Length: 222
Image 1 (cartoon, rainbow, N blue to C red):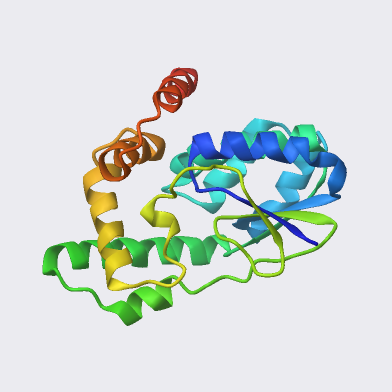
Image 2: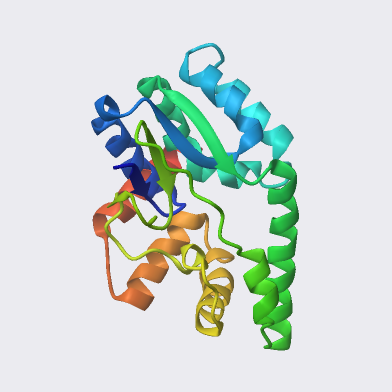
């Protein structure tokens, strides 16, 4: 049965995911990542030791101008683990152009809903159309939601943030997302900081060890 490793898009969660990939490395030949298809060549070259980390960073900056830094903040632990895995890498996410376009639409809908207090559910459903998640018994697939017909393994073990709960948008989910973005993400240093505050305030879960780990990670990033 194909394996899907579930993880929210958080740096700390990607650290957990990378560890799980390494633990399962003998069970698969390659990995499917929810990244732009254009990154596939560079990531395979990095996994094989042909190019260095700086080359990957420059490629991401070229493909995703404007939000490469934030994207890399989250995905760096997972991408760096590819060198240790040495496996084939396949990317199944939107193209970089589609990603940039959807990001612009996403921000537009967020601010419009925030200002007008009205939600056009159909527009949100079009934006968060479900992407097809590939399954292959010889590959592990990384995703943020479970896939029918697969062995789904949650590598995080904590509530996922509202940003990961938009596969089938509802008014309630969108309202929670808007609150999360404006009350937690925007005032925070990074996505992980926002998540840990939300986790404590909204879910009543205080993870002191994760906060300490995040502080260490932030110092390393300086």
